[in-house]
Image (cartoon, rainbow, N blue to C red; front, side, top):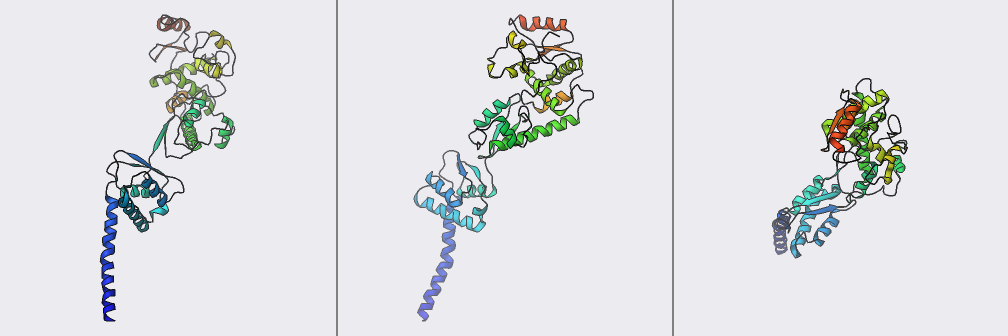
Length: 352
């Protein structure tokens, strides 16, 4: 009986000593650098647990070979049982670099340090170009490809809005699997906020009556110049023309109205061909924006520069020359354009 007691006591001592040693040995594999020679990305899909992630890591050889991989998997499960990480693992992508350990990856997944991707919407894009950019972003979840523009606006809760111009051209950060609709909703809400803010700070006596008209005018300003500092001056010209009842006569509206028929050139016949957007044939603003205006263009539309200019012509370097009279404008056209390229039209046009 005493012998059995001594044996049992010895076993207890061995367990007390061995378990921490084994645990420490296994845990050491969590701290060792993983066999990486270059950066790698690990994805935690929606609904995945730790076992699935560990299986994928082993399959890719990121846990090492043989017993190393097995001990790392055991160590990961011990870590998970002690921290309950498996119950709050964040979906997304995680970056591993040479020198990183499995423990550092587990801690990233526990904290949700997912890779942030970015998508930049460019000032001056139209909605068709925006949709193409979203469709080309493979890391997004695509839900809009089969929908019409109107159906997309319905999904965004704005069934009565034409989509053009309503999405703020900024850089948006997201994680893999985010839906394209989510990006659009963020861009829409951002543009609405920018427009509301700008309209609340608008100048007095503008020849536009609503925030939407400001958005339309801002989209034309955006398409007319690539020089940010010129936006208020361009806005001042358009504001003056609207006050005087002059047609805007701006080429970007003609191009937008031509749609897919535009081949890179505007002919005189295009200027005379009526469309709802051709500001050579219609008075006032077109019915909708023609592109996505940025914050600066919106601010310029509601706070135009005080100027007497009614015309401008491209200098050929991205900037414009502004004129008060038609005679000055025609001279500027000769000086800056006709000597370089026959048939060039400035914008706004030279007729009244």
